[in-house]
Amino acid sequence: MKTARALFIGSYRISHSCLSLRFDHYLENIDHTYVFTNTNPTMLDTVLRKYNIDTSNFTYVEDREMDALYPTMRPNWFFADDYRGSWLYQQALKLASVDYIDADCVLIQDPDTFSITPYNCFENDKLKFFILPNETHSWGYYKVLDCLGIERQTPHCFVTEFTPMLKEDWLSMKQTLIQRNKCDPFDAIINAVP
Image 1 (spheres, helix red, strand yellow):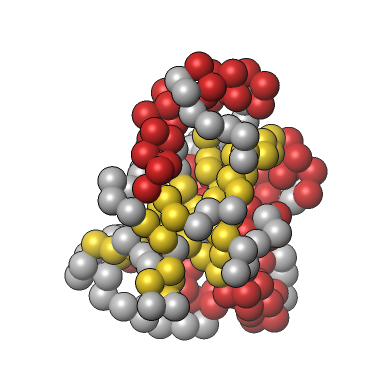
Image 2: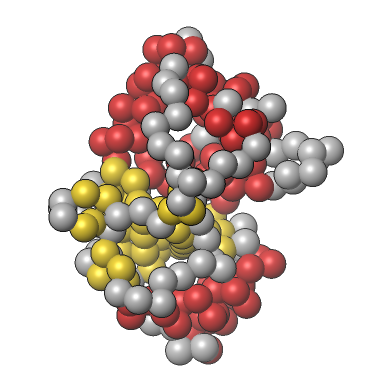
């Protein structure tokens, strides 16, 4: 099974990346890393190498490439007057990265999160998630489940800044979103977000 990582490095998060990527030796069985960024990839690569980060297995993907592939995503997910700012857009990019990357499993990682112990996306042939046991966020976070037509499946909260996702699960979810909501899957999700 091919496993890749989708790492999201905004220009304001480069310093976080210089720290967190030093813990990459704990990641097991990652075949390739895709760095999604809004900054110049050559400059970013130069900075990471300056801090002895091995980028030989990195592919840089600029936001403008994702904007070209998903032209309605930025205007529909980026609200200048919303306190969540670009955070919503980044969540859409995370899902789109699973579409973009040719792998069976994608580890979605924010630049300020990392594992300090050995981590493999799979444990006993199942995805290995980091969870906050018996944690609930505001009801708005779970409104997204409405567009899928499902109830909350667990009392736990998942750490979405460092989470594996199977491509087949995303493709199934995407198809359900389209069929159930009669629109683009990203529009279906954002329309459910309060």
